[in-house]
Image (cartoon, rainbow, N blue to C red; front, side, top):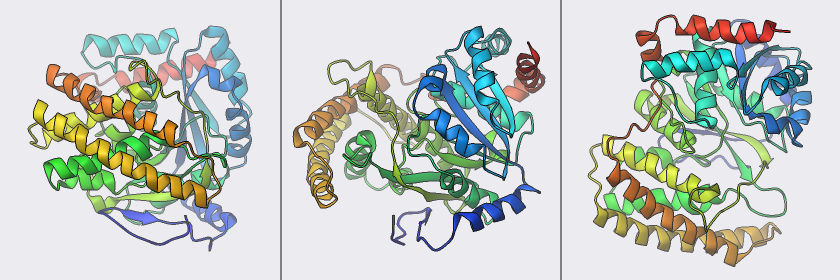
Length: 404
């Protein structure tokens, strides 16, 4: 995004088009000699048959500064795991494949469950939690980047720009990626555009200014799946197991780091990946479920900040959200028209109506289960309770890899 505007408490690092990728990669290669850099990719087995992951690996194979790639593999039986090993063997970097459905990692998870520390429900949050734990407790790298396995517009600049702010050791310990979410024909990012941003601004109107809300609202794409983190901070981070992963992670970054240690960076001129269905008729699926879990994560974090949440507050919040979100549709319609993108006013309003129900449903869920744990335990607690778990995790991954 070709501007240089700064807003909010975190630094925004722009793409001004003034530095070559070759120069950036050369500096990262020098940095990597003293600070090993790793990439984590959480993936469903089905992604191996998708259109994105194969081309992504061709790009990653040519990246000179990455020493380690960690793949979190979900929903794979034994034959599929063996196929995944072959699939990822094209990478010249050291590859660690975490087979979450395999007997050895299930045994590790059972030990955690016996101590009340298992991440529980399968999903991206659980996958990322195990991969981050593996990266830090097994000493894989000093800086770790995470991105999804379904990026259709992937190129070499994305991981370079994501890693550089933390790897360069200029004071940043966490970096979040942002980009224009479009496939070149229509605007994407409905949950960020039409739900999260207007929800945060409605919360500020209803509750008044809060540092936590200002922090979240400073991110241009708070729900992006791309981030980099100093490995020394991983053990303190708690994350949700559900679709509140991205917002929950930002909440933990807010709790553990100074805002001056946090930045966001423009990592792509255009970004597209697979699209989730809205699912307006079934709140247990698609973006309807995602929006509800995101809102619930925010409500629980607000409670830890000392905010009292009541049924009356949630009713006021829904009304404020709805008005703000409908106003934003007008803005996006003009933006789409200027850029020659298709736009359906009806579809946008259906999305807002679906998300407005999530505002209330998440509030009802919070009031009904105020004591339900919002996050997976952090790795610092896990190691404190079960000191040999890191060794067991590292050994399980290594034994899976050695098995014929």
